[in-house]
Image 1 (tube, rainbow, N blue to C red):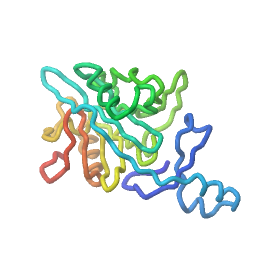
Image 2: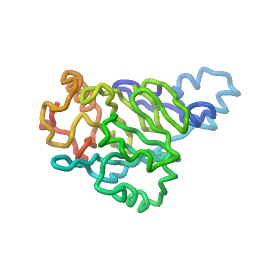
Image 3: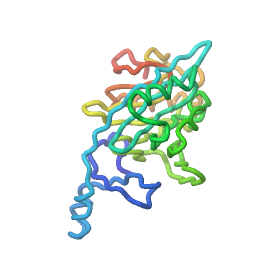
Image 4: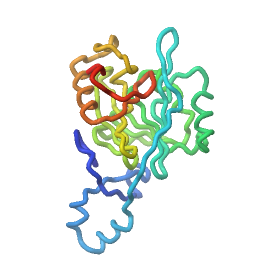
Length: 235
């Protein structure tokens, strides 16, 4: 896979017509150097220098009512929505998408951090999207099994396995300019308590938090506004 724990070194990418419906495949620079010249020249012609950006569609919340934080990541031709779950109205998700100049049909990928309904219930708003979870990619009637760890959804958009809240939790890591952004349910919100009261594995939760805090410069939590981690952030 293009990246692994603690490794966000650049990888060159090319489009592969048979890989996950024209998904991206990471190719390390050393590999490109060591292959035959005609193939190397073809790869060089397909290399990209992607720049990703993200937009907060809706900041989530919890309490008597609950809504997930919903985000859109733009990376080259890829439009990736993260956690299109419970919101007060579908317009809370769709209106910001429209204001950015996109239609629901334009969204290429959806990532769900875990399988609780408050993070999944509006997946069907995006009928053409591939859906990514902890163990597969789904598109139409196709099911592509794969581990999430290190999987590259789009250029500069990769998945980490971060169980804790549930055994199936994943974190979406996005390189956006100088920022490394973690979209994750390791924290509900900025002031999340040390212990997640609904956590299935506290040990895994704290290990995942430490891993993300070692790398991320910005955290987008499951039910709140993005925040810059500091010494007060629960580990």
